[in-house]
Length: 343
Ligand code: BGC
Image (cartoon, rainbow, N blue to C red; front, side, top):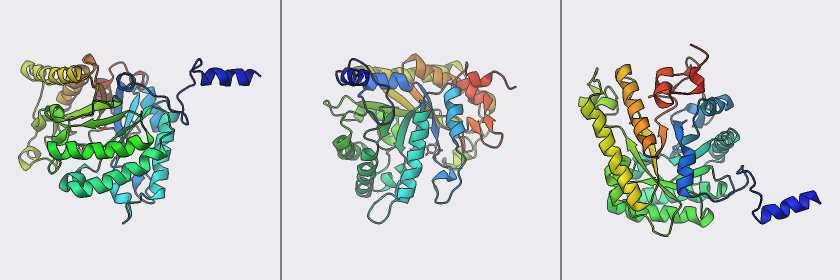
């Protein structure tokens, strides 16, 4: 009898059930952004995704992320290489993705599924449309009944062939595929030129879809954040020892983030700062100062953020030492419980 009464109350919405795996309850884009808060990009370049690949990530790393004070993981997904000639995603790969989603939810983390085939997509818009719609046609229904803590990000950093007009024509087709099975799940998308803040204004977001969160990435000044990076233009790869932290440089972050906030307020779209970081080869002291400044600037304006990244490079977790990269964690989350205790 008691169970019957409880069930009836749940149906009437008088008792809110927990937002666990297996139940989707809508949440506004604004509330979702607030709840995402502090986060980190994970697993993109890890051998975990390769067939037979052992991988470094275990359940305890998700726990460590949660315990350190993060609320969100942005899972970096290179899906295209795991699709066959008919664009079917390998079941082995999908099961690996299930484990990631389940483990993140188990540790009460928000989990962003970030489609990261941005290089392939930006080379050829037609190929991108075919493959990207195929990806979401398979991933969206797979997670349609999951907790609202699962959030979809259509495509990381469109650029090159995906100019503003092409992107504005393409993303609604992908969004329609997602909406067929997930009419109210929050979806993240950003502008062209590698999710530049300057291209948010060009995004033509559908007025009738309120479950959208806008994103931008921040690596400015690029010669500081990417000094010594092999994939940067040669003159930036050659740089070393560049420091950061003058008053003018700090003021620039405020000006840049104020402009994003103004766009967000005018367009009533909450913001995720989906990537930011200064590469490992920049002087550590300046990396700390920059990372702290960017993180605080985001928080001051109510942007959720996900640091680039947990492992591989720009690391905040050091698999070799099985511990946090403490200076970077301290810059991101100054009061992190993970920083007390061990030296
Ligand atoms: C790319 C990474 C790169 C990072 C910073 C990301 O979007 O996937 O390969 O390291 O941006 O440049």
